[in-house]
Image (cartoon, rainbow, N blue to C red):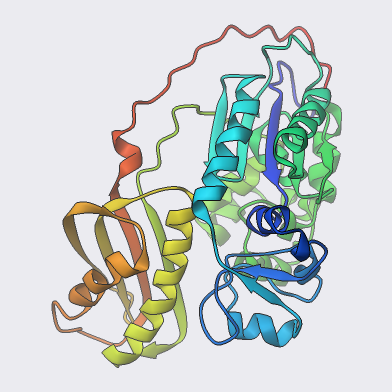
Length: 365
């Protein structure tokens, strides 16, 4: 099956090891060295790692203790979100030089629709190269990019030539690209799903494509329809400049069921670290914190509390989490705990509506 025009021209720009690169930018002594942002060798969680540290297996969400064990010469540095936000704002200003159809995903990545653009340039590939050069010129930081006909493929492509590279998947290359792509490289396919696919003999996109829609729904539920479509290059989500996040969450399923509330506090501490990292990365605050409890019999319970002021850091919201845990007696042993924020400050921001006329006669990428 061949995809039919008209095609959109989507760029996914992703900063290279953003937090770590900012630290190296601001402190020349750290350049070329293995560094981790956040945590320390005793406790805490790594928020980001430089490419020098990644070579040793250090990655985000890893405990500082484990990171140091993998890389004994690792240097820990503190997060500086004021600086990240400052640089992120400069990077977004560059995006808007080319298009108003910008959908930020976090401080360090965004989608751009350049089907029609302010430079009148028909080549999305050239625009991506210009944007990356402008980012380096203005901030001193490197970025990678993926370019294709939809957000899904652009997102996957941006990871292929990292760091400081870009990958364009032209319309006529999309099907072959997806058929040859390892399933663990499909954006949204995590370790658990990838392992399940391997057990089913699904290793690359072409293997996935051989499964019928009915089979995929049976195997993967609602996600089955998504997999059926994306492996055929179908992903109709548009770049949304008015994108407003309604909630942020983090949760963890345990290998063994937990009965002790004291042990649950330890687990919630780690989940709260991850939630704080996501709140800070997305420059988001919330008033409502929700505790999700899934019991060993798969019944689920949520407990929420709304505070008058916005919260963002673990120091601010974790006392509320403990209140919620001890609010009622647990009815069974627990297999999953989760924390989420609602009533976010993003919901009170005015959406930006942009409507442009598209001329799809030019298919050059």
